[in-house]
Amino acid sequence: MATAARKAPAKSKSRSDGKSAGLSAPKPVDFTKQEELDAYRRMLLIRRFEEKAGQLYGMGFIGGFCHLYIGQEAVVTGMKMALVDGDQMITAYRDHGHMLAMELSPRGVMAELTGRRGGLSRGKGGSMHMFSKEKHFYGGHGIVGAQVSLGTGLAFANRYRGNNNVTLTYFGDGAANQGQVYESFNMASLWKLPVIYIIENNRYAMGTSVSRSSAETDFSHRGASFKIPGIQVDGMDVRAVKAAGDLATEWCRAGKGPLILEMQTYRYRGHSMSDPAKYRSKEEVQKMRSERDPIEQVKARLIEKKWADEDELKAVDKEVRDIVADAAEFAQNDAEPDPSELWTDIVL
Ligand SMILES: Cc1ncc(C[n+]2csc(CCOP(=O)(O)OP(=O)(O)O)c2C)c(N)n1
Ligand SMILES: [Mg+2]
Image (cartoon, rainbow, N blue to C red; front, side, top):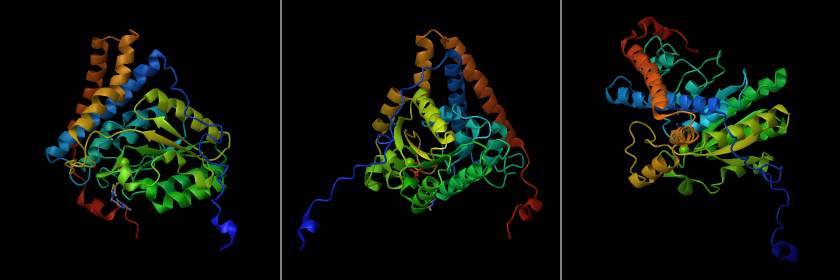
């Protein structure tokens, strides 16, 4: 055997992670009082909405699949705070929080969950299939990883049109092992597309933990073969997410191409409503809830800085609960789609 073949392979000098591109996770931005209150209200709306969706599911008003976003609220909230009008978002099936973050109507989302005609897809799409071109929200996708190619296509259209908008393409730690993700990475990097790949690492894909399913568990490195830099972000701290969002949107708008943000987060509920979550301990969930909860973190800062007292925060909660109660009322009483709708919106 030739000697050269026995030599240890030379270490690659050019790692394409965030560090080699001069990137590292930015420090959490200091929020103003208004930003803290805004983040608190937005995250609370998602939390209360999802709690209500869980209840309606239990009561039989919602059928089929329903994946709740409770615990992950800081991710969509912080990222939304970094967007400008016209920026787009696309995600998977754990999507109600993304819709509310993009300001789709709570009534429209809830009525879609209950399959009523006032729903955003006129009651025919359900939890995983809602869209709003007006609000630049492109779904809601049930096929794991499929939205990554679509999000890359949206970014391609933005680049082609030269409109300077960016596309947030969300996917999970499980989806990060899908082949089409890497085909998309290749094209996005080659053509310097303005897309931010946001990997919501909530530590599980259905019942499989990241350590059991992924050879590389640092998801910020997943773009290395395609020269896409990435950074890891504390996805439970809305300020850290906003700081990363600012960095990433500036990066894309400067024409530097795609970027990966690994959001380290956690889902409190099971994978879907039918998951008894036996693959993890109650203590693990309880620890995250009590020590890292994204909403409690903001609340604690607001109180510590004397920017709001308990009564003011209760009033925000009441306002949010009223919005959710109204949406639930509507979603339970609105009519079901007319049977003639069976023959509309069908691609033949
Ligand atoms: C192509 C495909 N394979 C498998 C499934 C079944 N499935 C639905 S969700 C899921 C796990 C995905 O986990 P992750 O990407 O981490 O997202 P999370 O649910 O944690 O948000 C799987 C395997 C699917 N919907 N589509
Ligand atoms: Mg996951």
